[in-house]
Structures are given as structure tokens and as C-alpha cells.
Picture 1 (cartoon, rainbow, N blue to C red):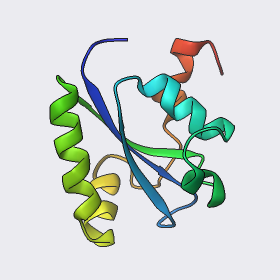
Picture 2 (picture 1 turned 135 degrees about the vertical axis):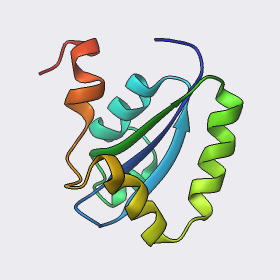
Picture 3 (picture 1 turned 90 degrees about the horizontal axis):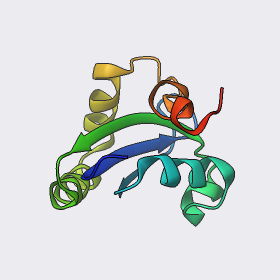
Picture 4 (picture 1 turned 90 degrees about the vertical axis):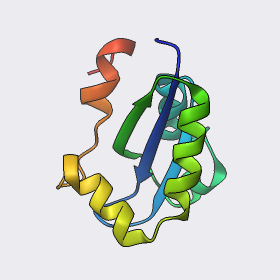
Length: 103
């Protein structure tokens, strides 16, 4: 995995509950969420669907972006997600599953 950071959004359904997170190791963190060992909030609300991923060159810039996005209105987060993922498909397979050998 490359150095830097990742901002990601987990969701439980189309335009449903969302969790905005930041990590230096996106594969490990998203996998934790999907397996139920990530944050309690994600577990409690069944947010197993990775709907948005954004890579940053530094973890500091990723943290700054995450803090900004967390403050946004829901509609703005919807627009961010839907610009690249209009159907809120699970992006795990596309982004990370091949790297960990999962299909």
C-alpha cells in the first residue's frame, strides 16, 4: 500500500446512514468495517457498503479533508458520492478486494 491517506464513506443503503472516515491503510480499515470489527457506529447501523474513496498524498491532507466532509450537510455528501457512484454501489470489489485476494 502506498504512503499517504484515504478518506472514505461507508453506508448501509442508498442515501441511508453514512460514516465518514480517514485512514492510512484503507484495505485494513474498510475490511475491519465490513467484518464488524471497525467502529461501533458502523457496526450498529450495518454500514458495510463502501460508497466513496478518495486518496491523498499525505495523511495530514486526508485528515483535513475528512474533518471538512464530516461538517457537510447530508445533501452535499450525497452529491460527493453520486458524482462518481450514482447508484451507491459497494466499491470494495473495485478498489480493494483484488489486493487482498477476495472476489
